[in-house]
Amino acid sequence: MVAQLGFGAQPRAVYAVEPTQTRGRLFPESESPTRTPYQRDRDRIIHSSAFRRLKHKTQVFIYHEGDHFRTRLTHTIEVSQIARSIARALSVDEDLAEALALAHDLGHTPFGHAGERALHELMAPYDGFDHNAQSLRVVTSLERRYAQFDGLNLSWETLEGLVKHNGPVLADDGSPLGPYVKEGLPFGIKAYQPLQDLMLSSHASLEAQAAAIADDIAYNAHDIDDGLRAGLISLDQLEQVPLAGEALAEVRKLYPGLEEARMVHEIVRRLITRMVEDVIHTSLSNLARVAPQSVHDVRLCGETLVGFSRQMSQTDKEIKRFLFANVYREEGVMRVMKDAERVLADLFRYFFDHPDDLPKEWKIGLDGCETEKLARRVADYVAGMTDRFALQEHRRLFDVTPELR
Image (cartoon, rainbow, N blue to C red; front, side, top):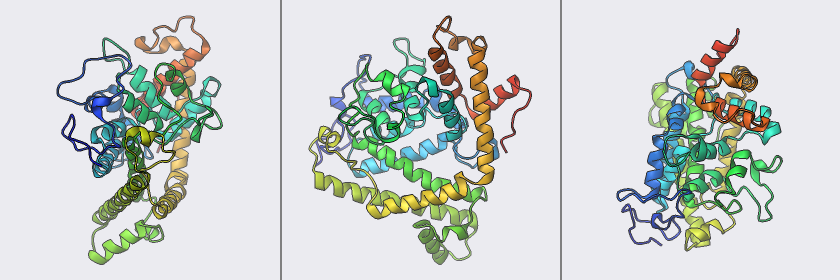
């Protein structure tokens, strides 16, 4: 099942993406003599402005609430580590899996999903706002670093995985799937598809699937960690949570009297390890059953091959239910997120009504433009802000700004 060593000296299975057979880039470039296309993509993502801004974008807890809570950047790095581990075990391209993990959150707004909700509501007349589609916009249009093109000009396989890491977004008949069933394809994906066909009705590569499940694993384990640090949940509450309760009991038995900070870490590392091991075992079993002979077979097999077992999938749902009830929907968190939505909405409305106050580079081409173009430009600008900058701008422009505490 393992192919001959290729560019980059990594053994790859026949169903892996092969760097020497890439479908290329929208704007043709000479290949690097020292890096595969996906190593080059990874490096471009890491050096992008959007990647640096993840340092000051948060998920659940606002940036000033504590230095030890996850930001989008620390979460992204943790996802990339897990994605590489899974990709290595499956003998697929680790660099592509890493690139996709590093890029998957580039389109997130300030204040996590609260900011996304605010922008999606405001952009409803203009095809809405979706963080996954916005990630595509960031890497294909909004990054302005290179003389020859806008965006990062990433390889076809990286763009495909970025859009479809959670599965096909269109059915064979062209109707939207998944989160896009009700409202259709979001603007970013719909606008890019005519430029480069990303095979929206097929599954993505195993590398993209590895990055997607790594995101799930990181969310579960690390939001438990942050919830404990914030005092929103207690160790005793974890006793009734599948897998987490088992890990807690094991740590207490092995290390009686262990201080809580060390105990939390021991629990989190066990959660990650057991979920990763389950994914690897299940995915190898799926691959043996389906027996794809190429990445093309993977895309057209009709199912996601990298994922949890049935039992672990149920455990994953139980953990998410626990986190929604006790962390994401906690009264204090909800209050802060509601205030955060207002901050983003205020900023959008201000710059929509006063486009001359946008930074110089963001005003280019707006004179006499259609309302839809103006709205998208403002949404792009506001979405790219960090939590800290959004609050600074709000204080500069408005008399009263919520403390978000």
